[in-house]
Length: 261
Length: 261
DNA sequence: TGGGCAAACTTGTTTGAACAAGTGCCGATC
DNA sequence: GATCGGCACTTGTTCAAACAAGTTTGCCCA
Image 1 (cartoon, rainbow over the protein chains, first blue to last red):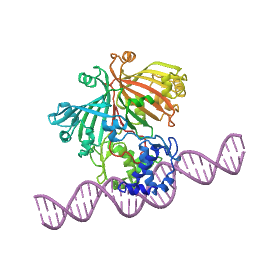
Image 2: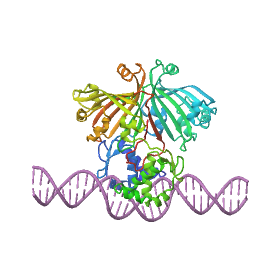
Image 3: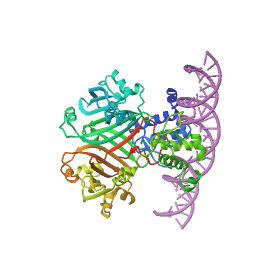
Image 4: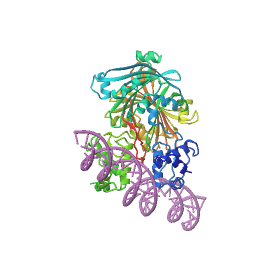
């Protein structure tokens, strides 16, 4: 039963395959929310793996918040859907798709210019270094939803002049080009729409906007991108789930989801 | 060197002690940010533990974002400070203390009344059930910083009439009283200050506020508390860090991805 | 001097075993 | 009938060993 999977993806380690399979079983509804899953010994037999490998897979699911439970009792299914992946959280395009909306963008400016004091500070560069700045209006189902002001470090920004920034995700494009974007820091607060914001988002000046300032850096800590994104709060919000024992799960939800709370 | 620690806390498992010790060494500055830490083999020798145990401890730190690194290379110190704990994120009082500010509160209302349609929905009760509602102005260094509107399920709310809600953390009080508060869901967006908000926070009506709607429930999923908290955005914000790396692996210790505000 | 290969070192994966500790059930006992 | 063991089962912890896979170092050769 599992051998088939193993043969299909011989490159991946067994504990990852097992984890993917368990996720699939939970997502498909084979194991319902609140129900216990088979014991470790059982899973060992089914997957033809040692207990260490099975435990590794279970730990992965636990860290994703999919299963919970304590010593002595078999783990139970906690959530049927997994929390947001890294790229879904970093990319407006991927996020929109994942919640069933159609993303869009209109690039208003793409410029190379010397870094101001502030931009240089965020990107950890010398003031005056040439950086690349992008101003984009992001749409959800053809409606203005967010205004994005991004500054890129020179090595990443350079690549943007060979890219149609109206075509989709800059984040994914840069990753494909080999730019190391593996850490994100997000600072979330609220601001009033200024003149430019209100014009572009077609709302009155002074309207509250949900602001996310995002600093994206490489695995070694080099800052590659700094962005100031301002959302219309009735179209998007941020959701965090935490547990006393699990790791926090973080999602950006469309306001539609709010109705169900 | 490690034996001392082991003797002191013989009740805790070795991998937790090791993790705590490594955290301590990072926090104390013994290992600087960006520097590699000793290899697994080295740590095995130092801690007199097997490699499995050492790897378990390292996985814990990795999931806390303290260390990073890939196969072939020794892990490097990523951050010197550890992320926020569950209760620090759930309690305004604890949070304020953790960032070196003095928290305060002025209770404006404490009432038992039938649940409105909306409140009943959030608490998953029948409309009309008697619930307890608290309206508090929260202060940072004696300055208004947040307005808190909380509804409690009957069993938790009942306890509040024996508590001085001006004295500190309701969250911690309820936990001490044995109320099972172990899961939190936070929805973050922005709203304009309404009449009451503006009066209490002493800001003009319409000013953008950072809103956190919090649903706290027990480990079994029973909703115990629903709160609508509105922060002055220049006094508080939310910060989240994420990484592309797998945060998986053997983490059940209380730890969160959430960074201090 | 430079390039390239190989060895030494690192972390990642996997197995098997044994014991500790917590939970739930069932039967014996009061 | 209620309560208290104890047994069977579960997950948690720890060890030891071996191989796979990626990185770094340094030496040899051109």
